[in-house]
Image 1: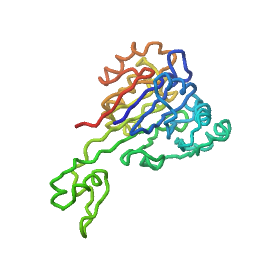
Image 2: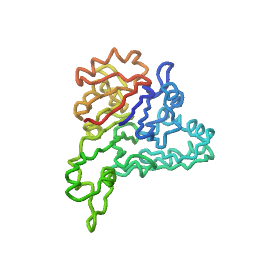
Image 3: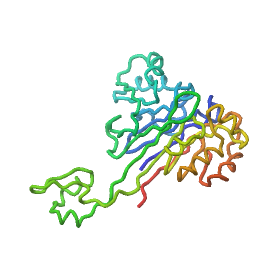
Length: 308
């Protein structure tokens, strides 16, 4: 299962009841933080989320409202005695963009690794130890005023274990668990592989976080089939589409259109302009296009579970 928490929903600057847009995903006791603007630590504390458990920070781009919280968070990790490595991923130019931030942070008693994800993504275990083998993080291109990307996190699920196949192959019962975990076993002169005793792979889980972006095909493709998509929706009015495109953003209706095209199951809107005083006022513009859209709120959370 995946626990997702939306820490903030504001764009450009935090306001009293709205922190800057960021989110966390926790799986098997491991956490990814998506973006880290000014005040993200405080937003996490209000939401009851410990960022000290985060071993990966995924940045969508290098505008200040998405990265200015990094120096403070990394210094807090140092003060609290962190020794666990921290991996920061982001789009092209990561090392140059983070150089001044790391200079501000200074010495850390924990290793900091910077990584740009390869096309096709990576197994989470390549970024940080302890993640499930089937957990994967993939970046996809988005359209903003600077180089930017969104992220999809997937947790694959193997097929059901078929005891009758294991028995037919002579696998001792005490080795069934190894096959269920994806390991092969030796039975006499033969190697039995998990695929020999498992049914077809079952539907896994997928979470998507967009960052700042205009409406684009790569976003719809990257979000394809997501169980939950947190999408930027900077402007509420439908007639603000041209302005949204000019600044590399989307309206509520445009975000809903992408969700519909992508066939996602749930859409949470976020990254609201300061002009959007009451996001709920504009929600009908989104639900008219995609029924399962909700206005994200600071601290909103959901647990995504495998289907039976």
